[in-house]
Length: 438
Image (cartoon, rainbow, N blue to C red; front, side, top):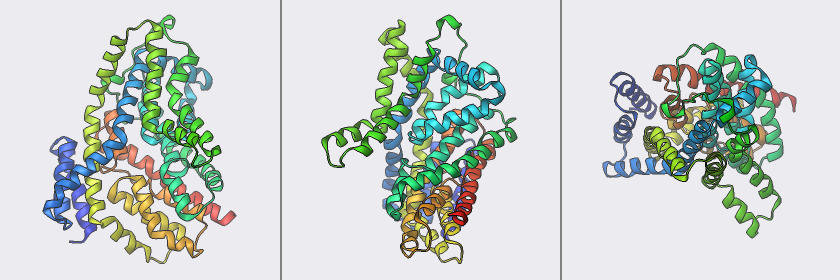
């Protein structure tokens, strides 16, 4: 059976197990991952190790970020800081323009932040706005999350665009400039415009993220609320700027690299929040720790689901099916930029991870760029756009959205998957327009 057919059957069975049979997604992922590994010809003895490696790799990169982000988010909610930030947003933009306010906030946060950090940072602010002003949840959420996706796929210093710049010997400044030009229409269409189409989809926050209205007198100040909630973004932005100005092999550069690690940033922000929103406001350390313990319970199931998606991704990568499909598509007689998008999008559908899809496609398409077949800066953006297409059940971001917002599997496909695909398609269109202009 062709590999693409095996993948399609595996994904269909996964949807059936989760949506119809109501099997917990973590267990469904383990079963489907093992079955797909066998069907793709992986030796039986290697299957358990591949599943474990997939779970370990993805949780190793996200566990601290998600858990510490959940702790920070819960403290931001319980202290009233999220409510204060919501008041500032509405005061600045007005309730009728809230979708645009959230898009701008998500974009500012998303430029320096890794996607997982930005997601868990924005969630309590989104829910505070939804709860306080009784707005449809997706009207508030999708513009912010679309902004994070645009930054993640198109803009350095995010991992995939930065690595692609190096692979293709592109100019990081030009790539960032072109990426910003493309990001605006992609964000507008996938965020505020599309959000109105799916506004009726029911969504509700996790119990631990529900904001309870507090009296004005009990709220923390606007400045400390904003600084505490956005400290991860500020730290990453500052360390990125400082790091670019330091000699590569200096001790100062090594220190900045350590401080700018997402795990270190989130733990630093959590320690800061413990003081500003906890101890400084009269709460005991024990009470703050109880809040953090409750936050762990809120995201435990999410971590398991994300771990399961990592197992499925590892099986597909280990079997080499992503490379086989990419190589087959590479021979198609298409514009190099369209070909780059198509190769990346296909790999993305197969393996789930946008970063893996982008880096895999780069390896296949590097000779094309080296031969002068395409502008390297635009090739980075074409691949980045393709890496966001058709997010579905094998993508950790899909499950973050579904679980955090308590949306059904079908409605997640209608909202999240379509939103990501709009960003991807508009991104490609922007690349093709730029290719005709520059």
